[in-house]
Image (cartoon, rainbow, N blue to C red; front, side):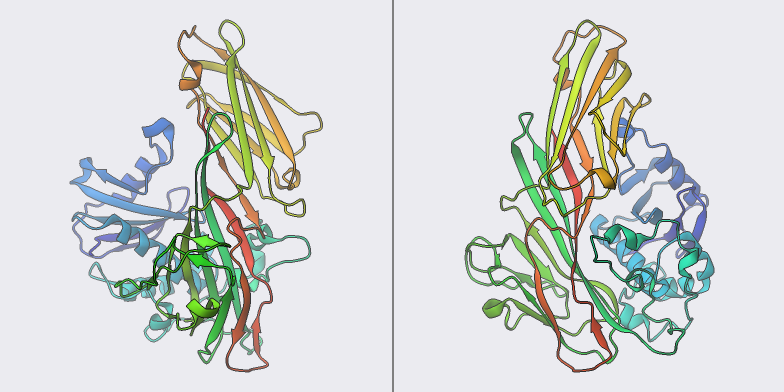
Length: 463
């Protein structure tokens, strides 16, 4: 795989980092990319896809991912695997975060020498050399300038993972894996997250048509001495619908299938190259020597029927000449002690919609509605305080049309889509029962809870 350029842009289009490896892409590629992303018009003014092809600049392929508001972009003029380039961009972002402790514009600008040193070791003349934080520590010698907590964004990223009395320590968000602690002592810590992105499609009557979970057990290690650790998962965990254990031939991730059964059933999964599965069949434990930094211990997929965190019902019907009414009802199906973060609900309206007025339930607080006339989009946002488990919310929208419509209005509107994040909750019920460090040391501190996060990947309700 070969790339021509790598650069990072801010949300304003400012060039933060730029490296041209092969001098074969015309100048101005950063401006061309940002202009196309900013004014993307396809699919109802939706966000630009992660890959697009620009004919007006000598056939340049642009690949990008958006991480914490920053655009990580690669360009090339040759035919390369899109999935490999997107994975490379994600890994570069992860490596930089391991070194800087936090990804934002300020940390990039204060550590640009270190960032360029990392990029020169990760990619040489357009060819990838390594994306391992552990390996790079032998070649990168600049110390990061760690951004003090007071200089971070006003909203602390750790705050979104607060749930009741449990809070993840700020060091897990802002700590570099290579920076020396000001006190002179190294804090021996390890953190584990289970992050699940769910995709659900509801029918017009509220029944589930499709559902899928893409999950990751993510680990961030600050342990010195490379101790071996053991992670125990659910004893009733089953992988695959039947058959014997099968290890794939891919060199970087063993692929695993096991016998069927009840309990938590995953369709398939793969593991980090450091994971050993010697006792996985017998007691569902994973053994590994964790490399420094953040890495996925296990990726998994689940299509077994599960209870979605939100139930969505939508109705649109004509209410007289040049008028229609939309009713959207969402119900939180998770326990009452769980609070979701901000929910955003969007619904495309008919192209001839000229005006929309909204009616919320009595006493509704922390809710906003908007009609974006440019792309005929209804938006409804609910803030954290109003999204408690078991709660139900309803929005009524009265639409006014600029012309009379004689067809089926339901074919001109929708579907409804939702985005949300639910801290300390996972849908699959996959759990880390315990984390055990083989080498005994009083300085080791495996934080004694696992952070669970559920996010919407594609949450859609048809009209």
